[in-house]
Length: 322
Image 1 (cartoon, rainbow, N blue to C red):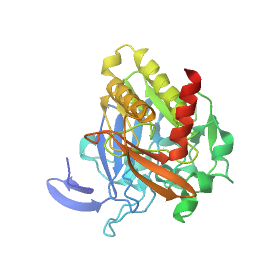
Image 2 (image 1 turned 135 degrees about the vertical axis):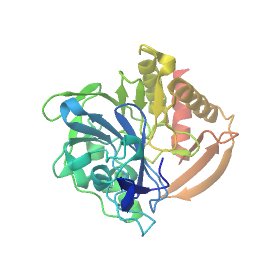
Image 3 (image 1 turned 90 degrees about the horizontal axis):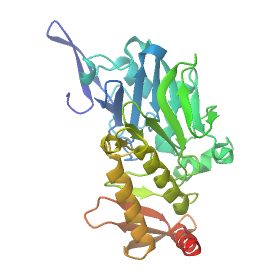
Image 4 (image 1 turned 90 degrees about the vertical axis):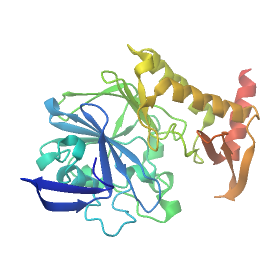
């Protein structure tokens, strides 16, 4: 593995070219890479996934990261597309993931928050961009500046057209060749959240629905009761696989190739403990016109940060269901 965001091309044992890049890449399966934006100015460090499907001449990307917003001004490669097409990756035999730009792209957005969409314009010019059809109004062009949080941060909102995809859709290339992934609607974190399920490789990609070691953040439009239903749905997908205990979960931040059932069940239990009052509020702050709260599990594996209103709404919904 090469040093942080630094890549060397060797020709007959001689170093001829050095790239410093805003990204790192690691192989997860025979066909799939994790790409990490390592030093963005927002300190999000988003996880991006690239599945190579040679028979479709296509790379399926899940998310596009923070665009060119690197804190390190010495890096030459800040574009995700340039990284894919130009930067050698040690775990790809020293070749770029899309060597020579031979393969086309299909881009799926796990949800519309800025740290997952700021690089999308690099691909939208010539590649389909897929979003959830669950809540079209939420991802509409006039709603995107606010719902992406770009307005709140005072940054430009990317401009792109997208295809709204129904729940439980098998994804294909532009020419109709299967890409080996099923898109699932997984609202809760946001109304437009999606997951990708790779039944062959037993890999589940869940965006920001859940992850470990950083706060799971519900925005104002989140819904904790709906999130519980999504967690149940994802567990059902895992349990329906041929080897449930072998399924690995891959998230939008921090968590990768962890046992899916373990992570889903532990996250559900922690949020349930919040609703029953078994987890104390660490802090309460006034932000964007309402009180926000922060909860943390002892040991820090899971934490939640959200408007307090969402917790109260979920508690009320739970009382009604009893």
